[in-house]
Image 1 (cartoon, rainbow, N blue to C red):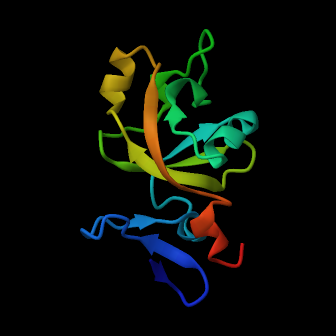
Image 2: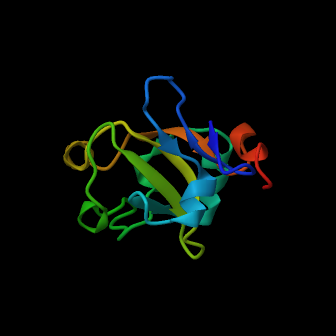
Length: 129
């Protein structure tokens, strides 16, 4: 865990140099990674530790499912943020389990992200929260 002396800003969870930002770091620089917006009611599941599923994306919803045209580009294994519409501040960071192209082929359904860290989790509690 890399801190500024007070807040945990980066984490190397594997010990292999795969550094990921924390929510604290993302709050300091919300554009450091692409972000997937969600509706506020979905946030309780993400903050509760659930992985993130594609139907939770709240971008250009068409027929109840998110529109891939409005989503940022991403690749399998890339890190992304999750933020609530209306707030804009990230609440989670995680690794994408598929690419945007794979998400489109899957009909915008299925698991999208392995959430690594969230607002109010144990890593968050290490800071001034």
